Image 1 (cartoon, rainbow, N blue to C red):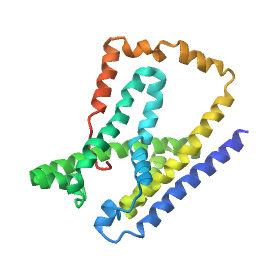
Image 2: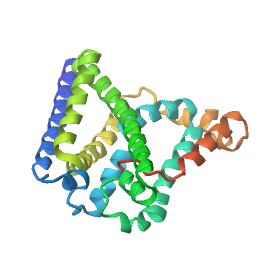
Image 3: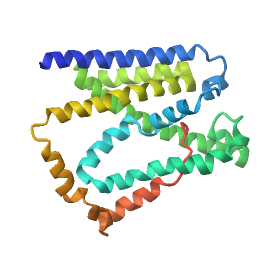
Image 4: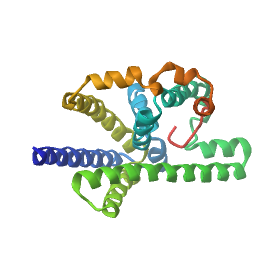
Length: 251
């Protein structure tokens, strides 16, 4: 049985990575200028934009970290992460509607340069690059762990493979490739994650234990949120911090 599931795992993962790479490279064939590379041809529909924002915002690194914290911290962590969802609403309703005059700019650093001069433009660009490096490191870490566990690759080989896949379709396809692969990934995850949940649920020896943990464990009680102590203040503070709209490069 383990060999069967191992074979299925390999097939699913390799097919997913191959499809992602093919979609990204194919999208890059329509890139004819730096403007097209940076912002696409601006013919994306609202559902496509929503899909790529969700896939970018709730990244693999976030899910990898959030699952562990949700298990160990319960509703307090759920409260903290709710700020990110509200931040998306604030970004859309407060910032995005005021960006019309910047639609011809290719980056937020160019916007900042037009408003405040070249020094601020460089600072914004460098800050965006550093933030991007950190985000990519998280993505590579998650991908390398998945490749190492599923394909029995060494950690170094898995990291290099993950980096090569991401860099190839991003470098050749630009914004259009990233957008289309995000849509593909969101569709795949929307189908596979519920299926995985059902498989795990059906594999539990005692499903009542799950209900017991959710209903009886203190960390999943509403009192954990509204009881004022050092831990609660930390998570409330994190939620308020997450509410602050930001304009990172992908956004």
